[in-house]
Image (cartoon, rainbow, N blue to C red; front, side, top):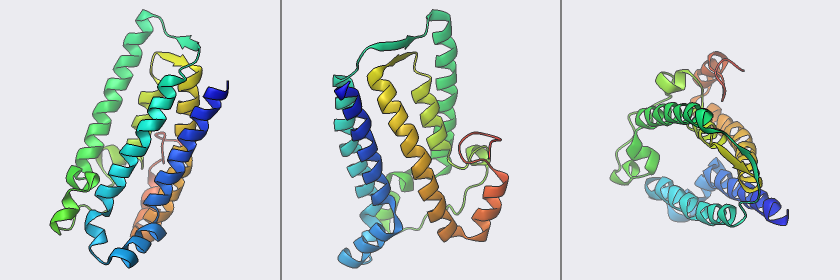
Amino acid sequence: MSGVILVFCATLGYGAVHSLLASLPVKAAARRWFGPSADHWYRLGFNFVGGITLLPVLALTAANIGSVLVAVPWPGVIVLAAIELAALMLMANALRQSDPAFFLGIGQLGNKPSANGLITTGAYGIVRHPLYSTGLLILWCFPILTTGTLAFDAAITLYVLVGSELEERRLITEFGEEYLRYRKKVARLIPFIF
C-alpha cells in the first residue's frame, strides 16, 4: 500500500513542478535572470526537464505495479485499442495544429515567431485541451488496471484538472476576450460538457 501512495504522491509532485515551470511568473523570472534570450530556449528546457522528471515517476510506477484490479477480456481489448488509436490520431492532429517545432521548443531557437495565434478549429474545436483529453483517454483505456497504475492515472487526472485550470488563466491573460468567447463555445476536456 505504501508503494501505491508513493506513486500517487510522486506523480502529483511531478505535476506540481510541471505546472510551476509553465507559469508566467517563472517564465518572467527566467527572462529577468537570463535576459530576453530566455524566451528562445525556455520551452525546450521546459520540455527537457518535464521528460527527465517524468522518468523516475514512471520507474516508480513500474516498480510498484501492485495487484491487478481490472483485466479486460479479449473482445474488450479490441474496443479499448480502437479508442486509444482514435485518441492517438486526435492527439497527433492537435500536435500538428500546435506547430510541432514550437511545441517542442525547437522553433523558438531560430528567433522566428510562431505563426499560430489562438487555435480554435480541428481538435481544438472539440475540446480546449485536446492533448490533455486524449492523454487521459489513452491512460484510462489501458486494458489492465493495477493498484499502481490506478494511483498514477488518478494523480495524472488530478494534475490535468488543476493544470488545465492554470493554463486557462494563462490563456485568458494572453488572448483576453478572444479566449473568453472561445471558452463559452468549446468544452474544456470532455466534448459538450462545460
